[in-house]
Length: 358
Picture 1: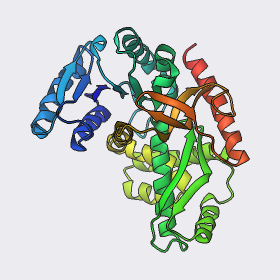
Picture 2: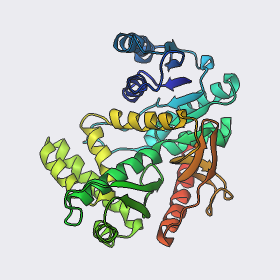
Picture 3: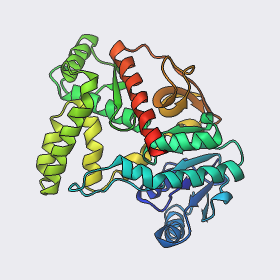
Picture 4: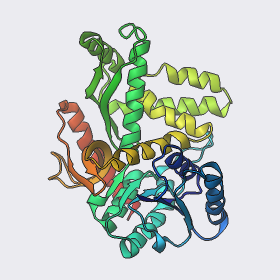
């Protein structure tokens, strides 16, 4: 398998490349392209990264090829992690609009290069932000079936972990940490939607599980999650700005699990970035796809109104996917408020995309 990582010299890109080799996802006979751009840290960084990777994994490494011209990309999977990120200074208000404006030309340039010079079958996995904007741009150039966003995958993984750890710490779980399935869909941003009705635990008493979920949700409406998360995020920023890391961690730990799943990445970002977890989500997806089977994963996709019982746009849904791309949205039995929240999310995302690309 050939993989290209756009933005390989950045923090997330380096983590992705390291994990691709350390997990054995790529080995002898495969190729890893480190994609950068001419000038500055990106150009020097990808050559230094090649040296570092081969020093660490010389016995098992694939062919590692730094490239500075995007038209030279030749890959089965292209991982997009290039672009600006929100400031990691908790004193600074995070602006999705500013990140979108900075990254839109980056997305456009790489999408055009792949469309004009690529193999014609590449699967693009987007982890750059805003994920929905990148998916929209790449899907327009490459076709929507060949482009997915990993935001919903990483959000889902966090949500499952917070639910599992919360159950284990509760009176109902009594230290038992279950294997949890379920989804966090919608936007990889403020219009995120925890799909409470999809949550299941394996190996625990059903009555205890249901009681815990009622307790964890606390009667809060899905529509209130953005406000709760924003308030909690602002409090964490205040504490970290004053270097009260222990207090910030204690504050986050007592939040409800859905709010924790949204706020924790900001905590990690402000205190040293989230490159390890972000990279792990992408590499985990590649491992799943590399097995050659069709799997169901939560991903951002550019869908039509025929793909799911909703509206057209870019949204995080459960989709059937393999290396050839995503095939269809998997119908989920969800509560009515969750369906309404997804409809509201896609409307919000559509408005953002229109504003960002106007």
